Length: 48
Image (cartoon, rainbow, N blue to C red; front, side, top):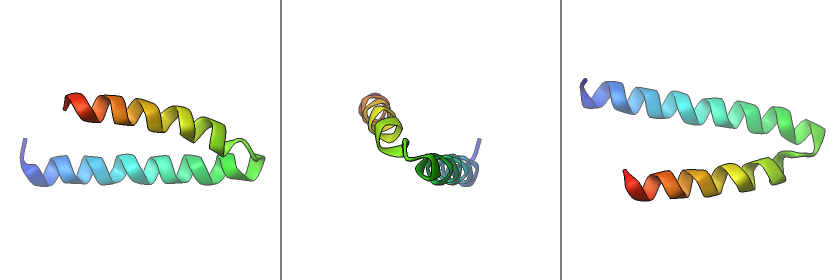
């Protein structure tokens, strides 16, 4: 697996998060969800 593939997957992952955030922000529940998601990303980011 090349570095280009890894970068591509990471970018797709963040685009997915941005799309979900945009959808959730229309319902007004994005801050609570992203706070939870941000903590899980920080936790996984430290171990990678």
